[in-house]
Length: 318
Image 1 (tube, rainbow, N blue to C red):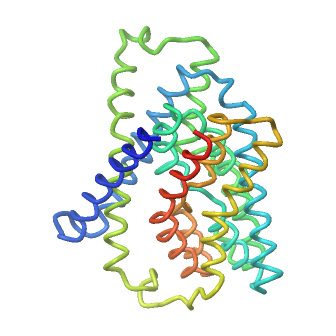
Image 2 (image 1 turned 90 degrees about the vertical axis):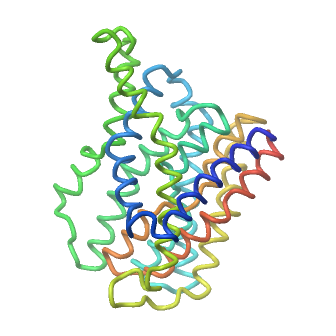
């Protein structure tokens, strides 16, 4: 518990440094995008390669991974039913609301939190695969159909996940592991050193980028879209926040318990469910011009509020 608390405190300090750098204009506006792209295209894929190349792949296909996957699917589908049938939102807005309620920030925060809680990033790989290969393409297909916007052709939508650097990193690390290769023995260990150096940048880059993005959101127009403010999210926002920070962890706890997980093993899916809403959801909402205010504010509020939920889960199960 003390280790997790001190680790989250370190994360908070680094995020705060990024926020101060953004608020004081020490870095130009939208610098978070540069750091995010550096993490996305280089540092995080390298971290996934080095992590999975030497990991016990049993952890990737374990009961705790299955619990995390089932819990996220249940969270999103139940949230969609809430937004569509109880709150009476249109299909596209209900889908954005559901994603805001259950689609976790697996890369930018999931990886560092997994390293903090369980000691490595392996448990987050199944969630990344679920989100990249299934949830995102299916969501885009539904949004294309119900909005009539056709932002992507079916072929491009199908192939898009295969070009994702995170997926490439996961696939490469898994292949190296299955081939029983040792990175240190390849080309005199140079690839291992390069990947290790890049991978060690991933967590601080993510934390600084998050702080910078919070500073930019503070300065940005409330709409998030140039020249246009989204309609108020209203009660749907607080339903999405509550679903993300309260319902999702409870579902993960229930699913994990039903699968026979206890203690530290159960903490893995619960911690994954506690993660805040991914920033991607605001980009999806903006692309399809649906529920942009809800998506933006859910990302901000859950990012600010997830740490106490993680600490409570760690105290309960750790």
